[in-house]
Image (cartoon, rainbow, N blue to C red; front, top):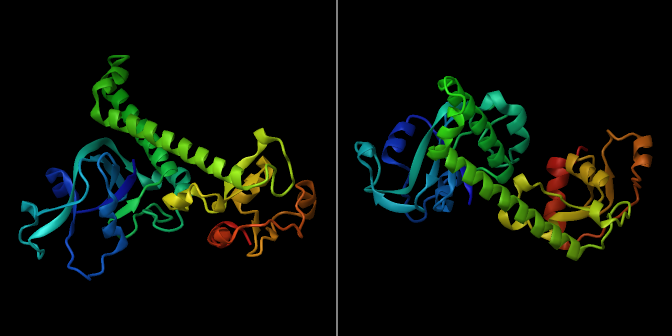
Length: 305
């Protein structure tokens, strides 16, 4: 299961009524912007969040992959060809729209460096369809569910259990709960596959301090999960086996590695803390040539130089 964020405006009501999203069908050789081409990635059962004027107003589930259809009636009169690319959706309107700017502290750290649907102030980026990766998907579901139960409880204060019992048959809640379960299972499976790959590649000890207690070692990514393509999420070339302290330093960008694998230490770490953490400036870790793109990413976007 994948998830996407669809940026809509005036077309939202039309597309919701028609039960689809669509793009113009381009001729052979014509350039298609990435956010429009992403409609081709959507598969049945995928989850989509619909963003309009600063708010997520609906959630939908894909009922088909992309296919060519005759232009819907609401497109008549527009300068489009005889056919469009479309994905059939089952829309579910949220009882209370989720205003992105109200939840920036929870959402912003989960946005990828590239292809993020939202800007730093919570407004939407220009484009059409953006990916919604696992951690962001989990957060959006949590926020929507929290708002949902507040609305339902306010609607039915007269019955103490009504806010709970009505959710049993609510298709929106069923969709969110199922999506959350599938997403969390996928996250666990991805991490397990990644950890196994790193452990098979690396000597079973912390690459920095040499700690060998296996229960304390963590497979840690150079390129964060939120920025990684599917194939990058599980490859050992994107990881290091580290103790909890050094794993946290790598994730926070307080340490990094040069092209040659030499340890880099962020200036924010004082000399005493460096000694306490066992950070040796001349330390060198041996990386495979395939790790170069991940090391470059970490230095550019994560390491606090």
